[in-house]
Image 1 (cartoon, rainbow, N blue to C red):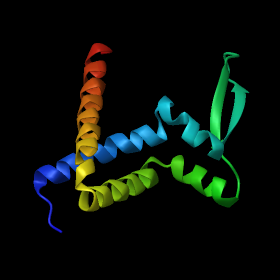
Image 2: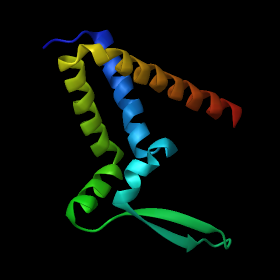
Image 3: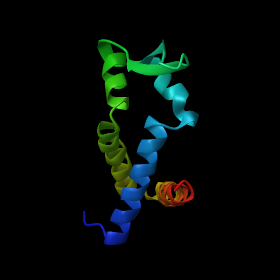
Length: 117
């Protein structure tokens, strides 16, 4: 199947946003938590820092490793979006929403960079 440049850009931006949603966003923390152990350590200033470590072994360990790798999750997010795009065209508005949210995230990052300089 051939896709246009604009469709490719929409899929790329949607994949970017979906991947960040799965890997980093607080709203999906409940999805990630079964696959990670929390380790709390004190830093040099005596403040507590929490680290998420993928669980060891089994399917939980595998998925924890996958979710801790932005690039790995990005491949699977892209595959999922591409399949949805090809076989379920009624869901394309959700892909467009993710793409617009991706653009907004990029703009916010640029704005914050200029504000903090």
